[in-house]
Length: 302
Length: 327
Image (cartoon, rainbow over all chains, first blue to last red; front, side, top):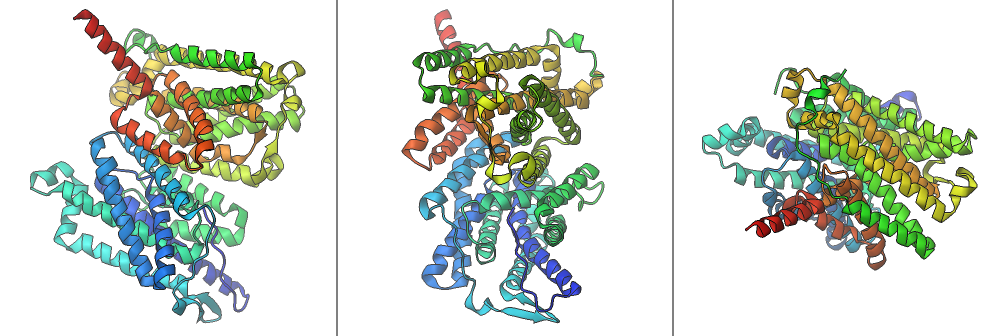
């Protein structure tokens, strides 16, 4: 897990600290939501726990950094990350997942763990092992004043972009014909195939969306948390926490889970910083023993 | 508590006999001891520690299809308990070893209970969380563990003088590993092992016959946890150093790769795969820093094309030869 630094304080009053904690929590939650939504989508559709998802996010961050430093355009950097990681997931599908066929979930975990090792080390070969700080778009360098406190614009930009993207994704899955087909496959794959839905073709689309979300997350995380060769492991564990707390395979639930983990994490950070990670893990473990299918899943719903 | 085990005695597949792995390892140990090379003795000790660790994971993953990422936490905690009891509590090494066994048993029974309602992927993720929690605690409790920087644990301070030399320690470690591996084989071949494998394949039917799945799984977690902690002790005594890295979930990931390449549900496969992993790391990391790319590729290829691992390949070849001889 990575540390989420607290923003600069205008006036150090108690209320301001709480507001900043909540804002920090929301920022981290937004990042987690993008990454965890990809994981959750892949799980719901393909029943795959993608251990390489964190590595995809890391590749996204590095690609965005490189594109950004050449073009000086944040939009192009984000777009480049999404495209490259989206293509990577197609390669993973064709080279690794398709030959595996209908193996057990454990085999998929192992095989994506192999992809994780390959990507993680490929990143070290290409970009080296040092950490980088990345500048956000120049228009978001400052801080915005909300009442008494000042908060970095870039973090609010993250929340805004994530809100738009997740809104669009939810609308796509809810209202479009393709989205309906995706939901049908998630509900009952056999039946969906029987009524003529091409699940194999849809699975490529879902993989690209999942990969694109990971790439987007990485690109957004660069100026916020820095670009480091171990950033994949921390985000992977955190987004697993989100997905498992919220219950696998539902976007709405993932939203609840991301907010819970993000806010608990940053609140813990300001209350007792060295124990914030422990606090999150305890919350998650208790939640799971209380409701093994996920806290934000409707009881009785499959 | 579990059910009528005696009824299971003669059912289920026979365990494959691939003792060639043990013979090869013993030959390596013999070579290392005779060569008097400190490098070979160190290297062989590491092979044994990781091999035993992967074999302990095989109990859960191979026989039970329980992917438990807490295994590396037990590996690390075994080493920490040993070092802490001898250096801080000043007890004898035998008492410390008893602490290790009791501690590992207690912890893995707790984990087993906490995880007993979960299967497959959820189990993997929950144990990943519990493992990360323990890893965090190990970093924060710097007074006990030395925190991030780790702790030097010289063999001469931990073991009695007769066992501290590289050669004597290697002989001792080999004996411990052989005893552990054969105990695991016996346990998994016993009626309990059959019941445990059945809980992987036919959970519902086993319950129908009056067996308690929870009890069977908790006992399996206990057995596997004790062996993992023992492997951690050998690792710590061999490297004479311990830090939280060995508790991180990727240590389990590494053992998992070894196990898979070696062959699941054989115990020997874990031993072979864990040892092969250390061997590859030792040989390849001199050539390139990013040798784990090769590891990832091997892992992907094995999962897709040789799901029974190297020992499985050996079995296929033997069967083919026999068929050829019959014809």
